[in-house]
Image (cartoon, rainbow, N blue to C red; front, top):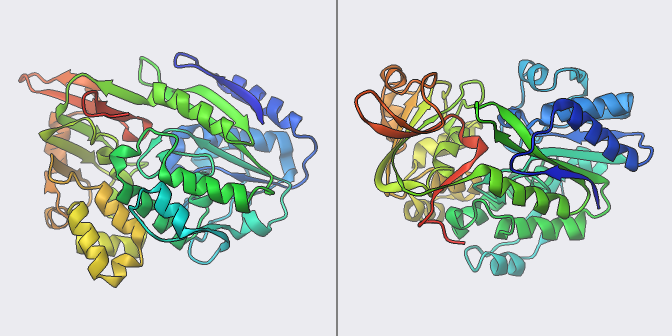
Length: 424
């Protein structure tokens, strides 16, 4: 059921309103004695999950026994990141998700079902895996907090993805990513009902129904001055909490353009984006807007690696962003890539399929490294001087010399598409 819902494209919930809304919802749950909070990690710092986690701690106090950031395969949060994102929550409550060994396989989605929902794109069973702390922790409330926003793997982020992928195991994460990539990213992004979501829903309905999970979903947008605000908040324990948030996110976070982008410039905040694994949101979220033969320039002052995990970094360097046919052939021919299908999916996601040029301007990677994975390279400093984030506004900009570009200050906050390219 829904315990709280509020949202509209022009709504704006203040921090006090978020606190009151959360408290109102939690009061309806009755007494709880052992609470686990599962928020996103620092890569979703803009989700307002940090303050909502703090409010949950204010409400329950010492009854919050654990906070488990949904890392997926991301790097563990640093103490500084925890202090910044979750100010006011005792750092000793935080646990690190171990996606290699700290999970339990609670069931298996049959291969026939996966094959059916993916329209034959893949043919394997999917293991439903969750963190041991979720499965065996003995909590009487699991608060899953996250932002619903267009997502390249599953269509719309959050809901049970926060559990099965955010706290899942290597095999489940890898295969979920590959299902989405093989089915086709541009058929998925911005949609609430996708093959990957159906697989996760199957697992949730059949294997995890007894878990005391309550979802807290935000929809985040930008005000006219560029600052972030919460446009919607939905709290509940069934799929309606997700579908309502997803419907609002489509209005808030999906920008339809009347013309394709011949040149787009995307800035990656160095505090948030350290790798192309994360930074390629700049590609995922703009690809449906890019013109054939256009150029996407990625200003990436904090990018120092390709994969946040050493093995994934190695695989990206070895196989590169060469497009779907080359990646699928590499999966077939190479055991190391077959063993890490999320890396293979990422390689597909991060390619333009030869349709437009991708120019990376990293702060810490060399020309040889960037060109070695299939991207064009440009030096960061002169590109920052030409495309100064402090002077550009989100959307269309005309430079002093007449060059017209489309600027995006944070690709994680939206999805862009050329109206005539997008097909419902």
